[in-house]
Image 1 (cartoon, rainbow, N blue to C red):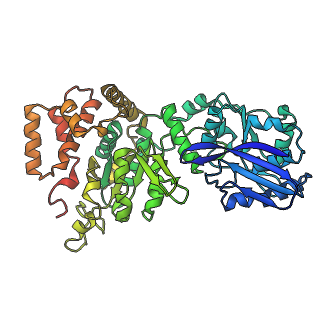
Image 2 (image 1 turned 90 degrees about the vertical axis):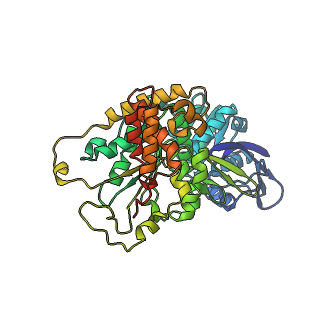
Image 3 (image 1 turned 45 degrees about the vertical axis):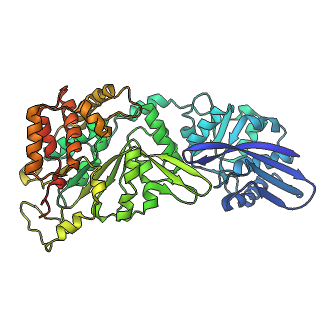
Length: 513
């Protein structure tokens, strides 16, 4: 008897519906076809044990399982459940196989029939709704994640017996109900950390506010213990909240990567990813035999923080250059090319020299001559060209550390950032995909970043006196445009330019001696 069930395969951040055809006929042996990988081939042993353990029987004749379309490689163990249900239907142990066509099934089976969680439940649910399926059966741990998709009945199951009972009587299970919008908006402003925790460092807070308002990449340069990492971790608390569309994109990436916690729904806060400096280029940008999202995609719509930037391998840093410009990364293999979104803010930190105390107000640098410049040369010019703000961090004096007064709360800073982003949204409303000043091209600078004669004179004098490189010119104009937006000013004033010029430390000739 031939029976069809339906599952789903995740490629990139999208899902493809897979038809599982199970046929029991005269003959011997079990056969699995349709480009299954080893994990899928091994499913027959898991299925046989789960079926027999729970009092059902496996066929003693020829069993053929086809995963269609047969030219797409099937990976992972999540096809266990639809194959098992197909076997039960083909051997007439389930008497209503016509119901199979209404539902997508996914789940890994343990030997006792327990159903284990899967990756990619959200894109699977989106695809099931798109193709008009009535419902989706997934492991209970993934039910809330998939339940965010409306107009689709999602059932969480924990054992194969529950699935059998469901197909005998559809009222045996109740669909999961998730109030997605309410849960999303309730969790948006829930942070364990706050800028009020930081003592002193008002100039650094100001720089991060500018970076958040304009979507600018930034680098913090300072000695160990100055608070670079502490400040960086608080950047997401002042970024504008995710929109529902952004949250859905971010959740899909984390879902296919298996990074979502059990029983979670939408990612409600902007991601903050901080990979270790020993990371490989594939782990950073994504890849593998079956391409998976890397750290830059997991940071989509959020912040990628690279601590101790010069310690990263040069090849790792260089592969980020194109994704930073295009805001996506393309992973190509012989038979498939996948695009992963990678629209992130880059925040980096570094010591000024190997010993960490170059330009320190109290401690003396012990590095030999030329070591500082050699250390900075680990970061290529093209990468620095994509970083708008270079901020020098100095140690906090004891008097400020000992203060009892709280600093400004993240909420107040975030409100100013949201207002500035609103101005930019209105400014770029006719340009698809553009929402922040950091995305402006050189041509757009002439339209949106005009300065008066006094401002031109200041910029010219500053570039000559501070020996700023030519690449600093565009960055200064973009940052000054953001500073003007934070003040609600239509025009870029001299004071806005003066502040922006201070954020180009690494462009100054002779900065490293």
